[in-house]
Length: 111
Length: 153
Ligand SMILES: Nc1ncnc2c1ncn2[C@@H]1O[C@H](COP(=O)(O)OP(=O)(O)OP(=O)(O)O)[C@@H](O)[C@H]1O
Ligand SMILES: [Mg+2]
Image (cartoon, rainbow over the protein chains, first blue to last red):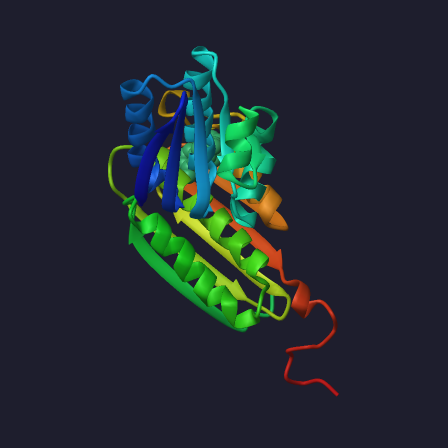
C-alpha cells in the first residue's frame, strides 16, 4: 500500500494506492490518524482513484475516521472510487455520512 | 452439482494470505469467462470469509484455512473452512452491523457483503469446532443456454 498526504487550507487530502483489507487496514488507519493529529485540519478527503480493492475492513476504518473528523466538526469525502469499492460502500450505507465526488477540486469546493 | 473442475488451497491464517486467497480463487473462476464485475464479487466475498477465519476463527493463534472451489456449467461454489472457535449464534452473526469485535473497528458488514455479492451463502458452525462458509454464484454468460456441456445435440 502506497500512501501520500497533503494539506490544502483546513483539509487533509490522503491518496491511497493498492488494496484496503484487514492486512493493510492498520497502516492506512495510522497514516490518516497521524495526518489528522499533526496538522490543523478540519476536513478529510480520501482520494481513492488508485484504490483497486476494498472489503469490509475498509468500512470499519472509514467509519472510524469519520467519527474522529466529525468530533472536530469536519466532514469526510471520498473521491473517484472504482465500481468494486463503490458497491462495498453502498452496501454499508456509508454514503449517508461520507459524500463521494468525481474529483478532488469538486470535493474541496463543496467542503 | 455436476463438477467440471475443482481446486483446493490450504493456507495458514496469516493476514498476508488474504490477497493471495482472493486472487487465486478469482483466477480459478476466470476459466468460466465471468464479467469483470462477477470476478470482483468473488474476490470480495472470499476476502470476507477468509478474513473472518483469521480474525474471529483463530483470533490470536494461527490455524489452517481450507478454501475449496468447484465449478459446473452454471458457475462456482466456494467453500471457506476453519477449525477455529466457531459461532454460537449464526443467525445473530449474519445480522448487518453485528460484530463481536467493535473495539477492532469492525463494522459487522462481512456477511452482508458476502450475501450481496454472491447468489447464495450458507454458514455452518459449531462452537469450539469451527466454521464453514459455502457461497455460490452463477455467471450471466453461462445462463443463455450456450451450453458448455459436452453431450449436447
Ligand atoms: N470464521 C468465524 N469464526 C468465528 N466467528 C465468526 C467467523 N466468521 C464470523 N464470525 C462471527 O460473526 C460476526 C459477524 O461477522 P461479519 O463478517 O459480518 O462482521 P465482522 O467480521 O465482525 O466485521 P466486518 O466483517 O464488517 O469487518 C463476527 O463479529 C464474529 O463474531
Ligand atoms: Mg468480517
